[in-house]
Length: 77
Image 1 (cartoon, rainbow, N blue to C red):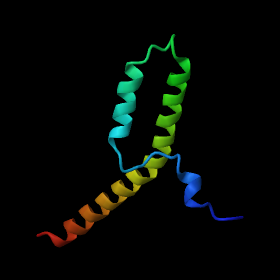
Image 2 (image 1 turned 30 degrees about the vertical axis):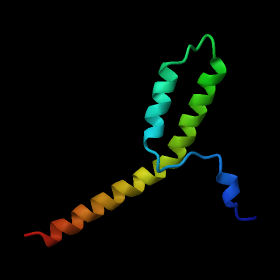
Image 3 (image 1 turned 60 degrees about the horizontal axis):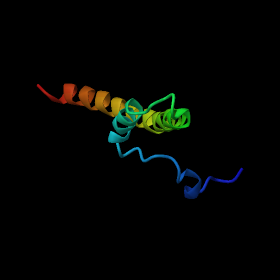
């Protein structure tokens, strides 16, 4: 199986932009769902893709934080 190339991931939102979810919430709150169901569905799909990208990052951050706390607990008097 071939290794995916960077271009294959070009449409995935950047995990570095943590404001994106908040901006999507605002966008969705301003939607008239009866007028624009396509926009609502697209927003939901974007939110799910962001969740798929950021969930592993948040998990790693939590693991690093707990490991550092453990290490510092052993070092600190």
